[in-house]
Amino acid sequence: MDNCQDIESTYDREACHLDELAALAREASLHLGNGSDRSVVALVQKSLELPSVAKLLRDAKQERLQNEVFIRIGSELSSRLALDELLPQIIDSLQDVVHYDAAGIFLVDSETGQIEGQVLRGYQVEALHQVRQKVGQGLMGAVIQSGAPLRVGDVEHDPRYINAREQTRSEMAVPLLSEGKVIGCFNLESDQKNAYTEHDQELLTTLASHAAIAIERVRFYREVIRKRQYEEELSLARQIQLSFLPRNVPKFRPYDFAGINFPSQAVGGDYYDYISLTDKDLGIAIGDVSGKGVGAALIMASFRASLRVECVHNFEIRDILARVNHFLCESTDTDKFVTAFYGVLDRETGRLTYGNAGHDPPVIIHIDNSVEKLDATGMVLGAFPESEYEVRIFDFRPGDTLLMYTDGVTEAMNSRHEVFGLDRLVAECVRNRDLDAGALVWKITREVRKFCSPEPVKDDLTLIALRLPDA
Amino acid sequence: MDLDFRKSNSVIIIELGGKIMGGSDSAKFFEHLETWLQEGFQRFVIDLGRVHWMNSSGLGILIRALKTIRERQGSLKLARLTQKIRDILTITKLMLVFRTYDTVEEAVHSFDKST
Image (cartoon, rainbow over all chains, first blue to last red):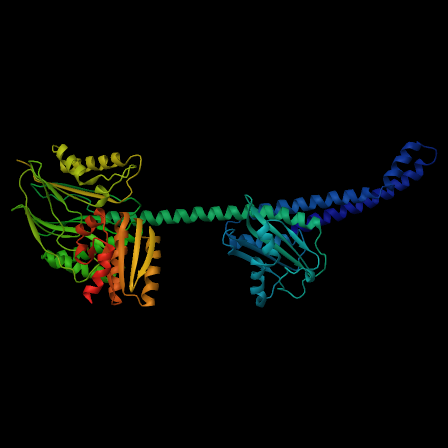
C-alpha cells in the first residue's frame, strides 16, 4: 500500500505543477502580447483554451498509475505458491483497481461446475449459502456459462440477481479464463447504483487475466508436488516390497535355482520366496494376488507374512495352506484372492512335497523333453474359508527342470491378441537346456518381452527355475 | 464388460460379454446384484457365452457374486462357459464351488429340480 500512496502523491504533485504551469503561461502570454510575436501568443493561448489538455495529462498519469498497480500486483501474485495465499492476495489487490463493498473470487471446475476454491470480502457469514448459489445460478452463473463479463447497474431490475447482501445496488462479474476455458469468476458488488463503468470492467478483466495466469501456475506447481510425493511413496513401497523377495539364492546343492520378479507397475501382487526349514529342507513358494498395484501389494505382504509364520510353526503343508487361507479370508475383500504353490524340497531324497492352491501348474521338463504338470490340489486362497488342500509328491530325477511361474508369463499378450502360453515356455526351456537356472530365467523373460513387443508386458511377471543337474 | 439381464419367472439371467476385468465392471455388476437381492430375487444365472477375456479381477467378481448370493440364501449357476473360463476355473479349482451348465435353459431348469 505504501507504494500506492507514493504513486498517488506523485500524481498530486504533478497535477499541482500543471496548474502552476498554466498560470505561468497565462502570465507569459500577457508579456508576449506587448508587441511580440503574435503567432507564439496565439499558440499558447490556443493550447490553454483546449479543455482537454489538462485532462489528457491527467488521464495519461492515471493510466500510468494503473499500470504501476498492475505491475505490482503481477509481481506479488507471481510470488505465491499456494491457492489459500494467492486468492486473498488477489481480492485485496482488487480494491486498488476497482472499488467494491463486497467481492468474491470463485474457482470452478468447468465440467462439473463444482466450486474448487473461493475467497470472500464484505459478506455476512449467514449469507454464505446465497453467495455460493450465485455461482451456479445468478449473474455469476451466467458469466461462467457464457465466458463473457456482465455489469448490472440496478440489481433490483435484473431477475438473475440473487440477493446475498441487502445493501447491494449494482454488480459486476468477470470470468477468469485460461486457454479459453472458464476456470472461475470475479464478482464485485457496490452499494451505489450504476457504480461500475465500462472502464472498470476493462480494468477488472485485465486483473482477471493476471490472476488466471497466477492461479494456473499455482495449480501446476501443486500437481508437480503431488506427483512427486506420489512417486516417492511408490518408490518407498517398491523398496519395501523388494525386501520381501529373496535377495540371494540359498546354497542348496546339488540343485541349481534362480527366481525373477518384474512388477508391471511400481509395486505388484506377485511373490516368490525360499524359506530355509532345516539343513536339508527348503520351502519354495510362488504366489499371485488378484489385481495389480498397491492394493495387490498389500495383500501380497499379508500373504507372505502369514505363510512365513505358518511355515516356521508347522511342517504339514495341508495345514499351512488351510491356515493361510483362513487368515486371508478374514483379512481381505471377498473379490480378492491369491493363487499359490508351496513345496518343500528334501535335497537328500530329491523329493518335493507340495500343495497347489489354484496356482498355474508348475511344469517339470524331463531330460527326454517329456513334460509333467503339478496341478492344483486345492482352491485359491482367501475366497472360501472351508477349503481343503491335498498334498502330493514329486521325485526329482537328474536332468529335471522345474519351472514355476505366474500368469504374467503364460498370459503375456502380443498385439495380435495371442498369448505366450505354456507351450512356448516349455519350448524355451528345452531349447536352452545348457543354460544354468539364472541364465534360463533371464532368457525366458527376454523371450516373453520380445513376444509382446512393441506392447509392454502388462502383468506382473515372476519365474523360478529349479534344476537337478544331469551328472 | 457388457452387462445385460432378463427375468425368467423368478430367475435373473445376467448376460455378460466382452472383457471382464474388475474395477468399474465390478461396481456396475454389484450395483445391479444388490438391487435384485433387495427386490427379493434369490435365483441367478450368469451367462458367460459372450465373454472373450477374463483376468483374475474378473474372476474375483464371480467369487464375490457367489458369496454374496449365498449369504442371502440365494443360489448362483454359471452357463455357457467358454473354454478359456473353463480353464481358469479348473486351474484355480473353483469348479468345485460353481455349478456350471452348457446352456442357460439347463441352468434355469436346474432350480426346479433342486427345490
